[in-house]
Length: 564
Image (cartoon, rainbow, N blue to C red; front, side):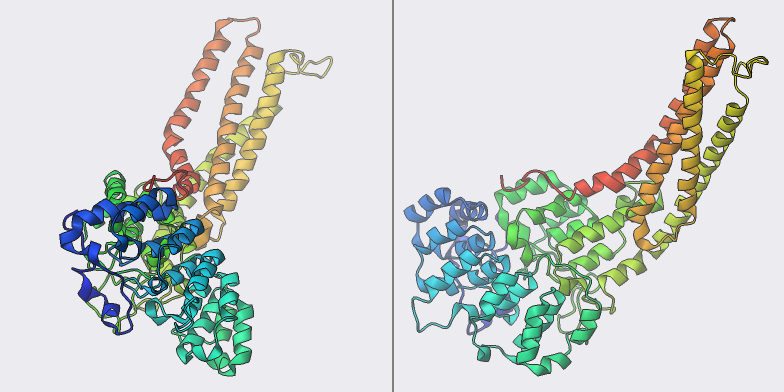
């Protein structure tokens, strides 16, 4: 795309670029005058690095401009080494290092991250050791483990935020204690607690006793966090700021076909953001488009640069120093657009979809971001509860009405089949005191179907009763209530089928010596209520199954959608 932004045109947006200590890569291929070279060489190299395809990348590097080995190849100023290290391809990195000079290992992307930061965040010990071994060949250079990345963090902090315990201890034992500033110690300490690395947090508290009384950005001490420790880890890092919204509009309307073709041809577009700092992934979450959200699983460790990107939906012009911005999880906590809610009928099932979205986004968020507060002082969970309280109440009313109606039908069926069990068709013999047609197949069919109808209808009554008296807590709509509704409807359907079978078989018993066609006609007509039930309840069944089972599968794509 000719109008795709490059770091040259976006230089003013990167504060780190003005830092005197900033070690930027060569931007030759990102200049507008070299756009043809960028798309001819950089785009293929980016794809090969993501897939770890050294066989395809090697000829390009050996037969063309040598600067391709270490120059920036993305609009985020990532070099080929950045991409390969972040994508966990150790063999690719090992081969590439044979071509690179030692000083190329300290090159930083637009957020200040070195390739070592990416390797650390990925938890790949082999890549980390390869980089350290190569870089330590020049002893006068500062240790690679101490070169700061995005946000001014030292690499060990990326390992902690990603929950890479082995990598964390490896780096902690290598870094001299004087390398840790006060900000480093505090940030690392609280990150350890939030990610569950309590052993390292305890070790740090023993070395620096003042950490026991320190407070984090939410004004919480270590004890506060330990008391609320219920979160789990997935990913974290930083994302470059780009303003061209070329991919934002198709992401907001769910145009996955167009978007997949566009990103496949121009991978850099995945980093674009609009004036609210919304990337494609942020827009997909806001608009509730699962197919586009699943792109996060295809960019490997690169996703760490997106999920921790802050957004400010209410006031995009506010500076970062004046406002505490929202996270990606806060966007998932907001109420979905009406069009997306209407994908299923009933507020209860809509609530189920909303919780599913919130939980899926939570899986890819680092713990420290899960409990982070927005500008209103609300965590994502608190915002979700506030935003969805009205929907929860509507869901409670909807599912109660549905359960009450179904329980009424089940009660009528129970009474009917119980009465027919007492008043046996064909009567009882005065002599033997046994049913007159006990030896007939039709009577056996009647007895079994009547019993099954009674049992299933009674079961349905208890299931629907349990729904009515439920507490209707927020997460009851996630699994408990939809599953109960499914089992209740199944039991009700079985009772209706068996009741119709029992009704039809009674005619075969009664009209044994009468018109032979009557039982068959009655049996055919008796099927009409079944077809009517299926036709009327099918949309509800579809919505329940869609929101309870099928929707969750949409977040687990079975094949590669972009980089294939």
